[in-house]
Amino acid sequence: MSDLHSSIVSLVSLAAGIASNHPAMGQCQLERARKLGVSEEHLAAVIEIARHIRDEAAQQLDAAFDAVSYPEQTETQSPVQEAGSCCTATASGQSCC
Image (cartoon, rainbow, N blue to C red; front, side, top):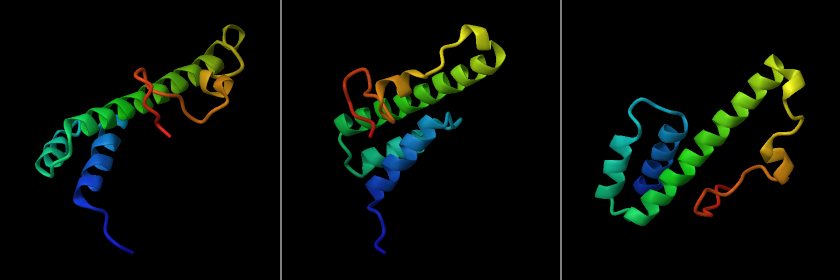
């Protein structure tokens, strides 16, 4: 098995940190990716996708809590289920799948 390129590791770590609400917010990985020559355009796309995944997860968690806490007031399907996909595009249309 070959090692992943340092820039890929940095981007994956950055996205995971953002999506998981890590307290360090991926600042170290962001700086490392810049030093490795990752373009600002690519960094912006990774950040947007990570934030989108984080926000989707929070919405689904809230919906699950509401379904248990207020079953008479909640819909039976989540927006993701209604869309028929495992993920939705970001606000700018960036695919997260």
